[in-house]
Length: 235
Picture 1 (cartoon, rainbow, N blue to C red):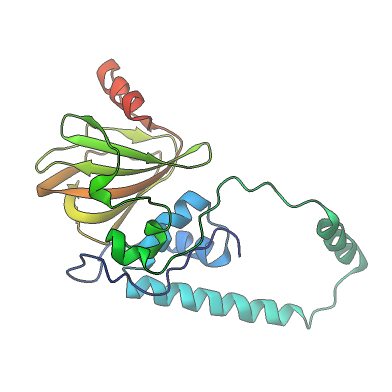
Picture 2: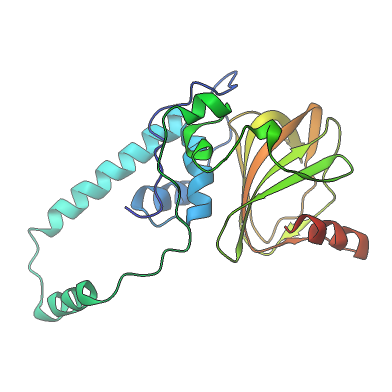
């Protein structure tokens, strides 16, 4: 399947203190299980799955249900026009690949201290990545096809990100530490999902935090100064 990453087993290098309590929305898991999830979102979801037994079970059940449904299709009579369209698609050139993950290396998760799906795209441990810094917020952009943004964000203890919205969906996975967003606290392994209707201001807990973020489109910050912040980080 396209856009899938190996998330079957948790990483030995994780810092988990318990199972996550915030999970991807069911629609996101369904897209991931079917192979329809965009590659940037697939990275975040697969990394969450490596840390979350509950969501791994959900994806396994969705994949089993999808396999059973495909099996039933073999017993269905197919019209000549459907067959002709299918054969035409097989003859068409394959779509261009915009983002390809490097080969998986099972030892990387232990070496870099992050779950395997993320370790497969990082060149070094989180603490050694090249971050752009501004105040108590640091951002390291990762490769991603437009219009997506994928980055690791480090927030110092007690610091909050300026109020902002989004031009599309944003998935945030907590890798280290925790933050509070509204009335919810997100700890290691938790995932926060917001869309263009949401304006929020996450604040890191005392020990600070490190997050993996994938967003469709750019962050929207009101005001000239805030806009300069987003442009500085490239998000």
